[in-house]
Length: 241
Length: 315
Ligand SMILES: Nc1ncnc2c1ncn2[C@@H]1O[C@H](COP(=O)(O)OP(=O)(O)OP(=O)(O)O)[C@@H](O)[C@H]1O
Ligand SMILES: [Mg+2]
Image 1 (cartoon, rainbow over the protein chains, first blue to last red):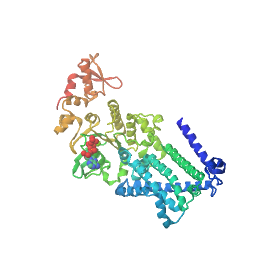
Image 2 (image 1 turned 90 degrees about the vertical axis):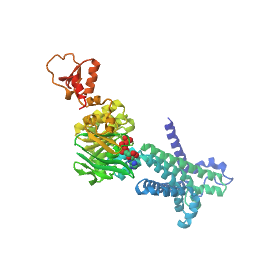
Image 3 (image 1 turned 45 degrees about the horizontal axis):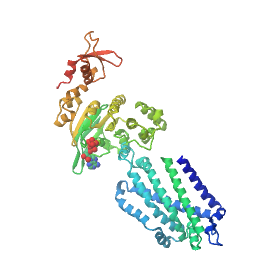
Image 4 (image 1 turned 60 degrees about the horizontal axis):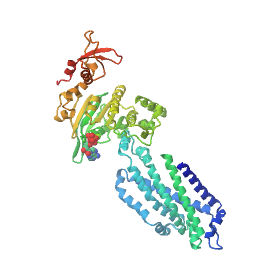
């Protein structure tokens, strides 16, 4: 019962977002009360759908990079010679999360220029921690008896990793990815301050022109996207278990 | 044959296994028994090189196990542990198929082998192949663990307290099954336990360990009648050693040919029963003689209470 409700809700959220992005003008009456008199009720300095697509793309690219690096690092520090690098890796990853993304942008722009690149770097660094820690927890939660059985039957290190450790850690790893994605959908809006295309543009335009309708549109679209990404990974998690 | 020669394991200053040597005859079960922390598991793990020895060596059929890469060696040696160690994310069939997969068997042969093993362990393939370990009872999980250990057709099977988590009735059944399977497949088994009764029931030879040292390696009856160390005597149990001795001999082996009729009302006992069970039956019935009957219900001799008592006497 609650599952059906959940599914219906998910579809409703998706439909709302798609409907809004496909033809935002249709929603003008809803937003008009928030716009200053005479100002447009719907963002008109760019195509909302393509902004959303760019936003999604940058978040997903960053998450992919974070996942590859964080999972790789967590695997490295849980075996063999890598163990001694655990404190260092942990410090680095923590630093990536505590260092404000805005500050990352400020440092990255002089190095790589304006646009998507500095944003990608900021999101990548910001998203490492949850994936790293969850992978670590997942790998460590593998019962020693299972690993002993795996070795005892003649699995080598790689077979044990791919056949036992990773599958058992997968639910937790995905949870980390889920967290990282959701946080970064919101964080990605700051990319617009360094000219990366994205939904942040709408919010900033609203701030500059005192147009609450723009701010709400940008915020809502970002929020719905975060919810949908979260649900997409949740679906994947249910699939594998 | 498994030859263990001067095997030692040290962790820093701690000697966990201390210069242990014994030989396990092919197609027999050897049981390693001892108190907790006496080094049994470490000894067992040195056979399949989950632990590398500090000194000494292990030969299987004359071949040093150190001569082969460990993961290849282990695919030839079955390994079953307490709490079964089944992979929770894989079905029963996938669990059993682990070693055949590693060995690169063709899919068809793997399928046939899985079905064969499920039958062997009295698990209906149709009902169990697709189940996940958490859907099984403890006894069923343990049987799948044994099936998985046997899947690669190993000549040698190592078992570390395989029945430790089972209740007494299921445990006795599992022991009987292991004996039957071992005879049927003709494999060599080294089994670790801290249960002396289990050791006596399963082991053709029993190795008694204490604090890393092997105190005695002998037939169960010899451990009872000629313990070489006070600890062995204590482990085997002094208070009921006569009864233990009786439990090592079957009615079939002790029965004497009938010297004519006249035993009509003597209680009947199964040929597979131990003398301990026969004695108990006689005491219970207030009889002095029992007729031994085989699986087909045919009388194959008789047992007088005096004959039974003679079997339990110190030698
Ligand atoms: N990797 C290790 N490092 C240090 N000490 C170890 C290690 N493995 C085992 N030991 C020690 O070696 C001793 C023997 O351990 P082992 O597991 O072989 O005992 P066991 O006879 O199997 O005991 P149990 O019946 O409790 O399973 C114990 O004191 C244990 O603490
Ligand atoms: Mg042990």
